[in-house]
Each structure stands twice: as C-alpha cells, then as structure tokens.
Length: 401
Image 1: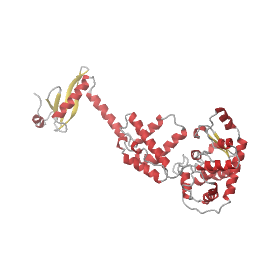
Image 2 (image 1 turned 30 degrees about the horizontal axis):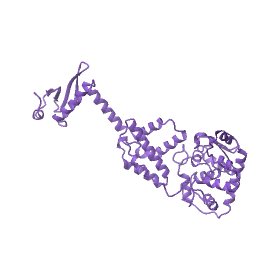
Image 3 (image 1 turned 45 degrees about the horizontal axis):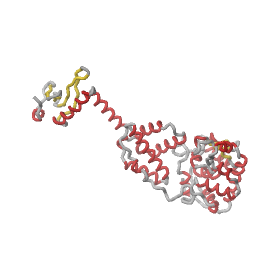
Image 4 (image 1 turned 90 degrees about the vertical axis):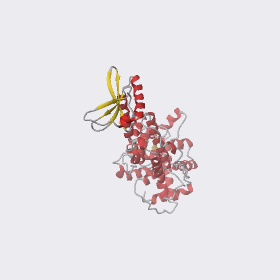
C-alpha cells in the first residue's frame, strides 16, 4: 500500500531505524532521533544501493515522488544518483567558493600571447584597483554596483583610460569564467560605455608660445616623488608615456649616452634607440642614487617593483596648472612640430618618434642608421628647451604629487 500524507505525518520514532515503503523503491526512513528521510532503493550494475532524496517535512511526499522519478531516470542511464549528487555538490561548493582573484589569475595565465609589459600592466591594475574590493569575493557573489564603485573611484583620480581598461579586463575575466563554467554572468558588461571620454584631449600638444611658462612651472614644482624627473626626461626624449613608465636602469647606457628600449616595451614591437643629450644624462645621474636600487628608473611609490602609474605625468601636468592645455603624450607632437620648424628632415624626426615604417628593408636601415643626425637633433632639442626656459619668469608651485 502506498503512503499517504497522514501516514507519513504520524510516523513516530522508535529505538531502532525503520522504513515505510511507498512505491518504485521510495521509502520513508524514520530514525530514533526523530528525523525522517526520503530514500530510494535501487540496483545498479547488479548491486543494491540507497539514495537519500531529502528530509521530511522539508520535502513533502509529492515532492519526494517527483524527485524519485529524476533519480530513476539517472539509474536507467546507468548513472548512480548518489554519485551524481556528490559531484554536483562539490562543483557548487567550488564555484561558490572560488574567488575573483583566483579566476583572474587563471585568465591571465591563459593569455599566453600577451607581451611581458602588457601582462605587468594588467596585473598591476588588478592589484591596485580591483583585488582590494573583489579579490577575496566568490565569483558568483559579485554584483554590478561593486563594479561601478571601482570604476567611479578610478575616474575620481582623473584616470578615465585606466577605468575603461579595468572594466574591459574585469569583463574578460568573467567571460573566461563563463566559458569554463566557473561564472554564470558578467556583471561588468552593463558598464560598457559607462566611462565617457573626458573633455581633455589626451594627446594635446603644447603650443610653442606656452613652452617657456610650462618649463618654468615644471621646474618650480616641489612635490614629492619621481613624477617631475619623469616628465622632464619625457620632454627631453619625447618617448611615449608607456615607455617612460617602463624605463629600467638596465636599458640605459650612461657612458655611451644611449637608452636602448627593448622591442617588448615598444608599441611597434621593434627595439628603439634614444640618444641622450647632456641634459638627459645629468638628470639621470642626479636621480640614480635615489632609484638605482629599483629596476625601474621611475619606480611606483606603492609598488616598488613597477613603474609609475599611467596617469602620474598627466596628474602632475594638472597640478602645475596645465590641465586641458597639454598631456604627457602631447610632448611628442610639441617636439615634432618645433623640430620641423627648425628644418630637421622628416625621416630623422619620424625615426626618433619610433613611428612605424611600412617598408621592412627601409625600417631595418632606419633602426641602425641616422644615429649621428639623431644625436645632434636630440642635443639641439635639449638646448632649445634650456633657451625657452630662460624666456619666462619662473612660477611657484608647492602642490604635493
């Protein structure tokens, strides 16, 4: 006779375990403790086995019969429901307990095609901006408002490009998790386009008329840190912001006055030679006692094993009163424009700017050639900056970095 709700409800414990049979192998197991469990007796591969469906009254008689049919379907396919339940439980625990930092680390490891410089850039952004908030959280507990708070915090320090990249990288981590069945959704996806471009043109050059005032404002700056010498060397060499940030003492030959930037640090993935003027050498010699214990010429205060942050130089430019007038990357356009005006040939300027050369044979020659011309041009440029600095009355600045 099949069980009824009344019979199940009235089942009382005794000093021994007993079972009340229903149908198709379903039974109610009553224990001396008073607990009552729905269990399913079945045979698989010729061996008897028992599967616990759940506890009564949390699972009613009707629900137990429904779950019984699911278990019977597994047995019909040769699957032991006890084993399947154990595997599912472990998978759920693992997914719920896996943290964002663990998933992000696996994602970074999987991207074997990244350059070393790009890998450091992503890792540093994660450590600085993401892990303090999300790192220890289970992946499935992370919600969109948490992402928004991270992005808003980055924007507040005037680093919109960093914010857009961080959103993109967080989203990539979750998509990697979805593809590997370790995440169910991407809470960062909804913030695509959330970070609007600022009004500042990030590559805006400095007009020649503003150069004397800018140079004196920079010279008068008394803030702590390496932002000032980094900006000065960037002006003297007009390299890209990423290249100044990644500059390492091992790449700089002070004796022969050459900065040899390895291919993996260059946008075009080609080694670049930067002739160093007397002024650049003097700056580096003055700085060396303070940072030579680090790999980077301009080490990050918070992360000594990394270079300065992506927004450091632009933040300094804002502090000395030139926000919206020029950007660090704009130094390149400033130098290029003025050098053209002074009659330097296009191929010399373009080679020193490390712009791409479509003709591979010509590119190979350019890499090794023009060094005498480039050395002279770089020294003339440094001398011109000195002359420009004398043309304005120094301004005062005491803002901290």
